[in-house]
Amino acid sequence: MTTELRRLRNYINGEFRDAADGRTIDVVNPATGEVYATSPLSGQADVDAAMEAAAAAFPAWRDSTPSERQKVLLKIADAFEERAEDLIAAEVQNTGKPVALTASEEIPPMVDQIRFFAGAARLLEGRSAGEYMEGMTSIVRREPVGVCAQVAPWNYPMMMAVWKFAPALAAGNTVVLKPSDTTPASTVLMAEIIGQIVPKGVFNVVCGDRETGKAMVEHPTPAMASITGSVRAGMQVAESAAKDVKRVHLELGGKAPVVVFEDTDIEKAVEDISVAGFFNAGQDCTAATRVLVHSSIHDEFVAALAKAAAATKTGQPDDEDVLYGPLNNANQLKQVTGFIDRLPAHAKVEAGGHRVGEKGYFYAPTVVSGLNQDDEIVQNEVFGPVITVQSFTDEAQALEFANGVEYALASSVWTKDHARAMRMSKALDFGCVWINTHIPLVAEMPHGGYKKSGYGKDLSAYGFEDYTRIKHVMTSLG
Image (cartoon, rainbow, N blue to C red; front, side, top):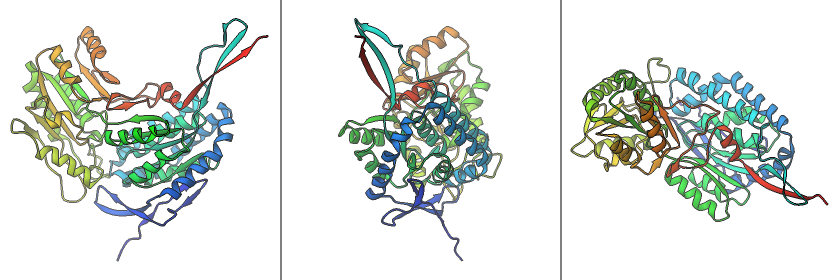
């Protein structure tokens, strides 16, 4: 006896459609390793149809007033709250995340972020009109850029979709959004909800693989391409977009340093850092993955962190005692396992370092010490429940180690010394610096990095402005 698979479909121009050529991808529940749905493997014809729909809908949506767009976004936020249980169920199948944490840690921020951008739609800021040349008045118009091609990742499929479509729609753009091939279910459900609120063609979802995303970015219609994903994917998007000078918004990898000084409350720091490192199975670009500890407290800190890791639980979504669920897919499990298998002889696994169970893609909370700055696991993004620990002797060396990677998304400093915290926050070359905490985000503040972590901002007024363009209008007073 076989269970019938769910059939997910694209959402284009206000209707659900299969891929034009009928191709599909199997979608796997990472908590079980079993196929539970099929998703369209969209090709050029599907991308063409979505872009045509978005382009046709753009003029009317662009010309709607900010207050009209605000009302639409507020309705979307309300609808997401009303359909929260359905969204949670879809996301849990997508990702294997704990049900309780998905309900408490994702739905409320998503709804809040949509409402923030609903308000931002009515608060376009710019320089005041004025006479900068005799007999002439200049004004600045801020306008939507046009059709936006957006690619969301698999680590937070729902929330990252919100980070993309909410500012884009608020600014007056239309959207073609592609979820990851491993996590399309919640995005397709979002399309069902949003489609009942926005005019047809304003919001479109195209499912598929890397080739689908490539076709979206290379398509001549979009004025902007936005991706949250790996550094490699970001480089490919930037290269493709350069061919017709598209605007690009990139949120890529991270390797967040967590700098712990000798005056830190070790017990409190370990408690917070372990959660920030292991939450969502470490599949977070801002995760507390790379701990740098002052040499005077190194051994005590490592012992406490290893104990915290051993007490941290991973397991099935309905287990209320777990902090995190499985890695997202078989390839990601292989990647994380490979980092541990390739550890140098001088490294020591203090906790974890192994797969948990045979069903699903679970990996134990892991702590690795004894590492050097040039070790692979220090330099490259693991994207799993793995925290590395290094020792430093003074502020200068802490900064050298912290900044000595190709990523520059997030960081944190742990100290009771205010002046030192200020010096470190200035010198750390990362888009976000937390002090005595790690990982909280709010809609009002920008999120984005430098170097190979990409460019452009999510959230905040800065993220909203990224989806606008500026026009100078000058008029003669004669």
